[in-house]
Length: 179
Image 1 (spheres, rainbow, N blue to C red):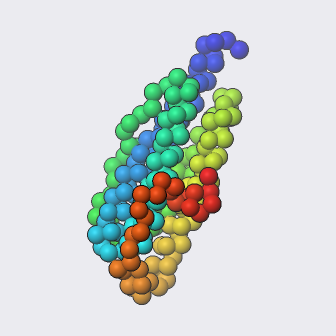
Image 2: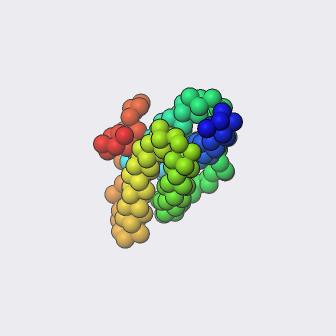
């Protein structure tokens, strides 16, 4: 294989890693905005978990950046898109479940591009992060289901709870036994 062909293949991998990084940056902003909103609405327990999920997304963004740098690329710093602000608590979790579902789908496609271009290390990175995103998806779907099924009685049970997240650097997935 020629050096030019190797560089072309590496560029394709860097491109998908940067797309993923941009998606993670958007997720960080979205989930932190929701964390603040939930905290303002006095749903501390939900706010605390949202903060931990945002920390997971920060770890993902950093892992993608580190891999991009290893490959000789420049990590992007712009989020993939705008965030939704001032969301109603009844809408947050279905919205986030859709985001995570789209992310898992995209990352599976990006993983295939890494494999097709001979980069098993980047493919493994996507596999690991997909596992975390699946944990997030399951959590968001469960919360949405509780809100949908139990409504105000569920929300009133959570209202007034402390966020109690402190400065833990672990993130949601690590706290749940993930990567």
